[in-house]
Each structure stands twice: as structure tokens, then as C-alpha cells.
Image (cartoon, rainbow, N blue to C red; front, side, top):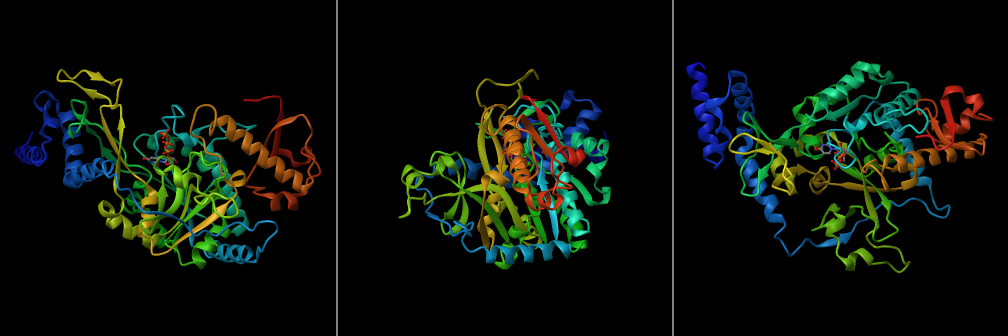
Length: 477
Ligand code: UTP
């Protein structure tokens, strides 16, 4: 090791020691050169934000002690026209959104850096084979939707894909192997989010190897800082994009670039918008969009007290009905502003987890009980910083069926059923005959991306559609 590097490591050690974290160098003397370089560069990166992270950790842990709780009120939302009610303003919003798309102002942005622990799939969730007939992956279905948009617009719509250390290499390999799913390589921008260290219950960083501090992806809220840090925001601005359509990788029903949503966002001069679905059952486990201490925010299912959970208006509808879909529209300028003050505007939240760690003899173990906290940022925390927020109601059956769990609700099975049900509705409304014994349907979104396209295609039956509509009888996967 050169003198300069020895000095660097001494400096690093003292910066960690200042925060009571010098133990991360406990094995330094035993490390070979490669491991020293690895730990040295990881520690140097973490040191940049260590003070802020420790404050954020303390704030996150302190939050659970706050018994006063925030003041919560229902939020105003644009509700779907009901009972054949007035849809003129929806048509005006659609026209406005279509103009934004045609002018090249919009990018699609998927967050795909999560670890998918509940699903337990050993590849990135975006690679999950969900196509009811073809086993097409989540990414492949989303790419079809973007190709459908491009076909309608006659111009490219760039797709930004956020990964994390957990998903980056495999996601890139998949996009390469699949030829970017038929999209131009120039219009697909893959970038990783940041990692953030975890802390044990004594507030100490955790070593998962003698030369490695344990870190995990910094949450979907990290997407806003990652957009800025990766240069994706600069790239958007170079292309004349000022509006980002944000969605999560695990929902194949998402209407990417929905013009109605974009149009309402723009008309309301919103900086960030929220799509919501009407919660019918008070026990449904969904975060609620509400006013929290005056600002629009999300109240987690567990944070809603029973009084509010069951509260109804005179019409007998739930007062806190606006279930968050995690589909947002954001202005690029707003993302930049929030990312520049991330420690203030995007707080970290702590959750207790079982974190693999080594003992004094460098033996690795994953504990049976939680031994520390992982820190995560939530994208919806940015809502509170938006000067205007537009909240728009959508229909769950048309737009939301996430894959979260291996079985049961929000699982691959329920999602495939929801996809088939949606395709069946499109075909029925278009008068396309589907044989009674058909159990699975899959439609190529690049050709037919909604009931209007199905009506235009006007296939009399499935056979006429060739590869555009695939069907299978029997239970399939
Ligand atoms: P979830 O919070 O549902 O996490 O993420 P997950 O990784 O899919 O699954 P679990 O909780 O480990 O079982 C919602 C969306 O946010 C993304 C996920 O990829 C998913 O699209 N996400 C989550 C990130 O991109 N980065 C993160 O750090 C966390």
C-alpha cells in the first residue's frame, strides 16, 4: 500500500470512529490487497453521507415513538364518471395527454430494484414469466405496451429502468438477450439505484464479510435521487422531456403513458400525481392517499385507526377510499428539486430485518430473529413537497394486479387470471369470439392495447388474429 493510500485509510478510519463505527475496519490487517480496495472504496462512499445517514437512522427509529400521530383528512380526487355521468373533462384530459405524448414530453420510468423477497423468485422480478399463455416476462409485456404507444404516436418514448445491485447485472443481460424487447437500444436507459447501509439495534453498521459492510437498495424513493445521480434526468431534459410516468415493475396491468392521467396532471399544474382505486372493503390492505398534516401523503394500512378505517359519508361510501396504486406522474424539475434536498424531503424509514452478519471470528450467519434495521426511502414521501398534486381515480380491474406474493392474493396466479379476464373483456366488447373452453388468453399489446384497438382490429375469432391473440384451454401454468 502506498503512503497516500495508508493516509486515506487512516482518514477514513477516523471519520468512521467519529460516529462510533470504527469496527467496520476490524479485519483490516488480515485483508488481502483486493479486499482492502473493496472495503476502502465502499467505506469512502459511505463516509460521504455517514453523518446524514446516522441522523436519518435516529429520526427513522424515533418516528415509532411519536404517539401523537399526524392529523389526517380525506383527499380531494378526480373521480371516475359514474352511472354514465359527465365524461367530457376526461375526454379533454385525454386530448391534452395525447398532445404531451405527441410532443415528446413524456418518458416511461419503471422501478425494478426491489429484492422481491415475498415472491421468492431467484431472478429480478421483471423477468418473472407472467404471460398467461406465452410465459412472457413482466418486462416483455411492459415493452409491448411501450411499443404500442410508439406505434400510435409514430415517435419514440424512452424507457428508463431503475435497477439495484440486486438486479442490475441480470436485468442488463436480459435486455441484451431479448434485443431490448424490440425497442431501440438508444431509447432504453438502465441505471442502478443507490445502496444504503443497515444498522444493528445498537446503531452499529453491520459487516457481512470481513471486507464488506452490509447494504441494501435505498427503497423506491431512492429512484428520485438515482434519476439525478445517474444522468437520466439530464438525458430526459436533452430530449425535451419534462414529464415522467413512474410505475412499479410488478404490475402488468399498468397503463403506461395513460393520456388521461397525463392530461389531468398537466391541466392541474401538478408537480406529482397519484392514481388511486376505490377501496370498498375497509380491511383491504392498501395505503390510503389522504391529507397528512395538511399535505397530500400516504397513510399506510397499519397507520389508519379504526375510526377512520370504517368512517363513511352520507352516501355510505368509505371516507378514506383512495387506495394508492404507486403509479405517479412527476415533473423533471420537481424530481431535481427533491433530489437536491433528499435528506430533508425524502426521509428514511427503518424496518427491523434479519440481516446476515459475521461474528468476531468472521463466521457468517443469518439470524433467526431480526437483528437490525434496513433503511428505505418511499417515493410517495415526495408528495408533501409538490406545490400541486393531482389525485385521479382508476378502475382496479383495468389497471392494477401486482405480483407480490408466491401464492394467494397478489400472486402470479391471481395476476394471470386478472390479465386473462381483462383480455376477455376487450375481446367480448369487440365482438371477437372466444371459445367457451378457453381458460387463458394473452394479447400482444404492441398491436392491441385496449378495447378501442380490439374494436378496430375487429377479428371475428381468435384464429383470425394469428400471434396477436394467443389462447389456451385447460389450467395451463
Ligand atoms: P416492494 O416494496 O413491493 O418490494 O416494491 P419488492 O422488492 O417488489 O418485494 P418485497 O417487498 O421484497 O417482497 C415495489 C416496487 O418498488 C421497487 C420494486 O422493484 C417494485 O417495483 N423497488 C423497491 C425498488 O426499485 N427499489 C427498492 O429499493 C425497493
